[in-house]
Length: 116
Image (cartoon, rainbow, N blue to C red; front, side, top):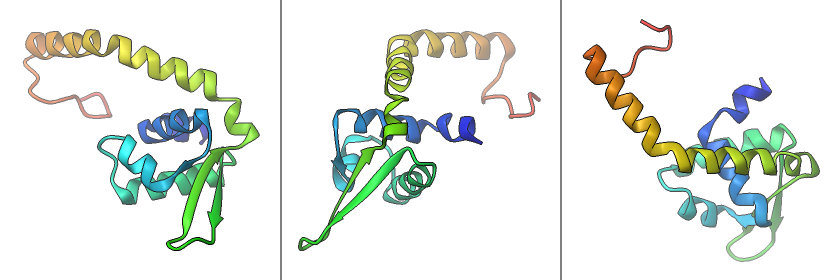
């Protein structure tokens, strides 16, 4: 269950963005390219439920909501940063491997999760 949560790309990106301190919801939405408001909200709730992030609400107009890593969430920062860095550094190689595989196997789309 925990690995399932951490294998989610949005969860990893959110945790990585919270590394430097508390961040507001709209700031996360702007900074994480491609994430919808709904998916961001759902992922934040899951991470909060898992005890990895905390949510603070401030009585401003409009209401301000900030998210931060908990002590437990901070134990993941080095691992998440290393994984994000690896992905950035190796993205071209992975894309090239996928293209080579697709050309070799005649695959126009990725294989199904069952491997077929």
